[in-house]
Each structure stands twice: as structure tokens, then as C-alpha cells.
View 1 (spheres, protein in one colour):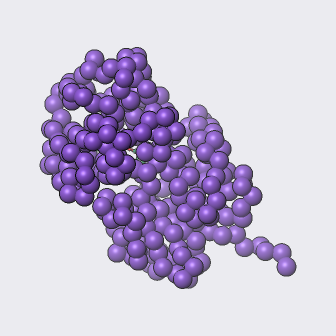
View 2 (tube, protein in one colour):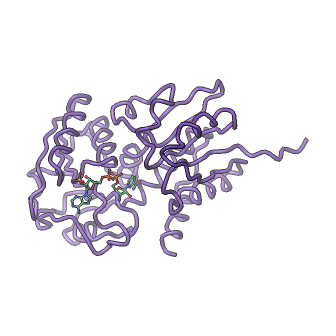
Length: 284
Ligand code: NDP
């Protein structure tokens, strides 16, 4: 008998209309010949509960989760990955055969994988992160779990830097410190990997860049940005000018896509297909 039913993955978020993940994931489904669909759904904060109650009855196979649900979804899940538990936020859910829900956070894992793809490993590295929001938190935790020697968190709102330092220091073996962001902030001595984990430079503010002392960047550093639109951010351009290896946010986004895809389907998708589709979307 012909099967007219596709397996469904849904993205829950609000606002979600401008989220390009579906195009990337669906291109990868097609590339692997999988009869899966990834449906972008507007789910408001007040509708999260009824939406979560519908996940198993509607036979969804998994979820992508974005703002404002990444933290609020946790009470509806049966199990979290160790990293998602430490981070306290989930962006990917697997619906298991028995109807239980497993939550993962691929933000930081995607970041670590994007670095690996550029030949950069975290072991014994000194990592400096500007920002202490959701992306910075996931990255700080995963860098520490991947063996970074030290993590320095620098944020405009110092209380958030301090709180994140406590989370990372309390749950990983890394040496953790934090600083309040100063004008033209000096890059900490010994930094190997410098990360813009803030939203500074994100479209339509592509002309902005973090207020740091760019002359402190050296050719033996790696500079990585979470911002993926535009891909070539002011931060990365300044870092590349000084010889640092630039790692863009698009690689991180595509690597996250790979991890979610693997969790939902058990199949490893083509990273190249995912990256190409994203680049096309942002070029338009
Ligand atoms: P949050 O709102 O949780 O955090 C934003 C962070 O940026 C905070 O640390 C905030 O500082 C800082 N910040 C924002 N504006 C300024 C400013 N003008 N000066 C100094 N600091 C500033 O956002 P997320 O962490 O969820 O997202 C951050 C970025 O990461 C976004 O651009 C998002 O698109 C991107 N992202 C990329 C991913 C990828 O795969 N490449 C995955 C997830 C996110 P403060 O605490 O003081 O407010």
C-alpha cells in the first residue's frame, strides 16, 4: 500500500515567521530521500501547554524549539541530556517510540562541532566569551565540557556574567571567571578562542560590532561569531584582518541542524547541503 503520510517534525516558536531552519532541514530530508516534513509553527507562550499536549496524539516525531519556549518547555519533557540539564534550556526534542519526550540543546554542541570542522579543538584552550545570554550559556557549557582549560565571560549586564560563571564553574572542571564589559574592552591575556556570543551585528544592524580592543587580537587566535546573518560580521572581519582564524555563525547553525536531524531520523545529513541552502536564504 502506498504511504501518503510523512513523518512530522515541528518547530515551535513565536515570532517564528523569519526562521529559516525549515528550508535547511527539508533540503536535507530530500537529499537523503527521507519522507519527513519540518513544519514551522507559530506557538505563542500561552499556547505552549496545549501544543505540548498535542505532540504525542498528533504523532509528531520531534520538535525544534525556539524563543520563547526554550526554558518553558522543560516541565513538559521526560528526560534531558546532561548538557541541556546544565544549560537549563532545550532547542531540540525527540519523541521516542514509547511517547516519552527527550530534550537536547544543540546550540553549544553545534558551536563545538563548527570549530572542529575548522580543525580547532577545545582541549586545554582558554576561551573568552562576550555575552551571557542563551547562546553564550550553551557555548560556555559545551566548551567547558569539551575540555577547555578556562572560560572567561564578559557581559554588559555583570550579574548575568556572574550567574553564568557560577553555572559553568559549578558543573564542569573548567576554570571560570567573569568581567563587566568596559568600553573598548581589553581581550584577556592568553585567550586562544575569542567568541562574540551577543546579538551585536545581527541584521539589520550589520554595521555594528562589539566594543572591544581589536588590536588585542593576534594571528594565533580563533575568532568565532554566533551571528549568522550577515555571515561576514564586523567582528570577524576585524579579527581576520589581524590574522585570526574566523569561524562564522552559519557553520554553528548548520552543525546544529545536523545534530537535530540525526536525533530525529538516525541518519547523518549532508552538512554541505544544509550550509548551501542557508547561504542562499541569507543572500536573498
Ligand atoms: P539573548 O537575548 O539571550 O542574549 C543576548 C546577549 O547579547 C546578552 O548577553 C546581551 O547582554 C548581549 N547584548 C545584546 N545587545 C548588546 C549590546 N548592544 N551591547 C552589549 N551586549 C549586548 O540572545 P541569544 O543568546 O539567544 O542570541 C544571541 C545571538 O546568537 C543572536 O544573534 C542569535 O541569532 C544568535 N544565535 C546563533 C545561533 C547559531 O547557531 N549561530 C544559535 C543561537 C543564537 P545583556 O545581558 O547585557 O543584555
